[in-house]
Length: 73
Image 1 (spheres, rainbow, N blue to C red):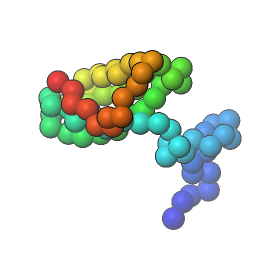
Image 2 (cartoon, rainbow, N blue to C red):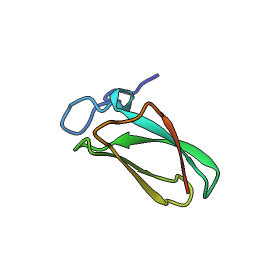
Image 3 (cartoon, one colour):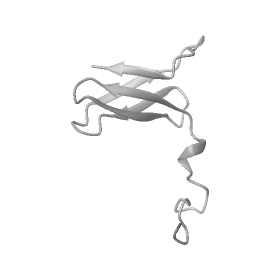
Image 4 (cartoon, rainbow, N blue to C red):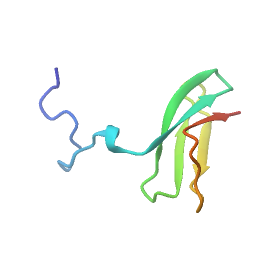
């Protein structure tokens, strides 16, 4: 059950992350998988390992790729 106001940002706009573009990353450092999301500038997917907080940034290229899951060391 959702609480009143769930899924809304402070300014009232929807903050539903299911609409955001993402890629899957398997962090080899801690053997965990997570999603990282496209930044606001839409230039890169940015995130971090949920255990050790190691950062990862995957830039968006002009030709792109069909891959959806990546490994990070």
